[in-house]
Length: 297
Image (tube, rainbow, N blue to C red; front, side, top):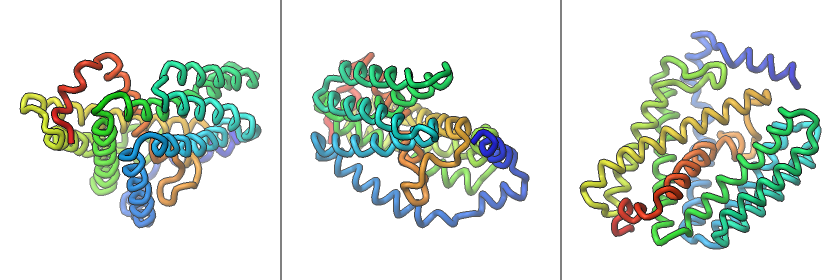
């Protein structure tokens, strides 16, 4: 495992100019990416709109897949126990969150993560196991909590979707078409500064559009531009962090569950990071929320 991880990193971390050009011009997975993206986006929008048990079921399905992917990456020789502990913690957290009991969700998640970590014989292994369980379960629980926390819950989720999807799409095409300097070739050979700039700009414009859609006051529309940029940049950094984790474990994709995208973790890593940011912001400023959502939809 270690040897294969080293050889893959050596291959991916320092692409030659000709190889980089081929990567930019390779659109062979575009059809699969678009088809998968449309299906997943449609399902996500429907679950978000319906809320309640529908969104809880969607979050539950996501953590099942992500728990498997994390176990597969972090403990390839002990997939089943790693999967069971992570799944128990994540599904329990989603259940508590569906009752708006976020504190209990986090507590249960940490308890299961620590119980799973006791199986590991090294400090690094224990941190990977405990951290991975929280990394998977808490964003899903927080996302569900955001949907039902107040009357602007649906608008919060739709804004997250709009900003992150716009950012991901434009970062992908911007990086592919413009290329340029890499952000961190050792972590992800395909991520460029041009992709970060185009993705962040698209997210900012999507945020500005949300301000109009939610009928906020003119004085808050510029704020939505900044909110969109911050959420988009956070999401892109979440994507880069996921690339770091995959290089750490010596794998190219979390799994191959989604054609053209890899695994569920590969697809929603940006949304997970952005959810943590928005959740923290609303926790520290709950009374300001209504000001930024105006009359809503």
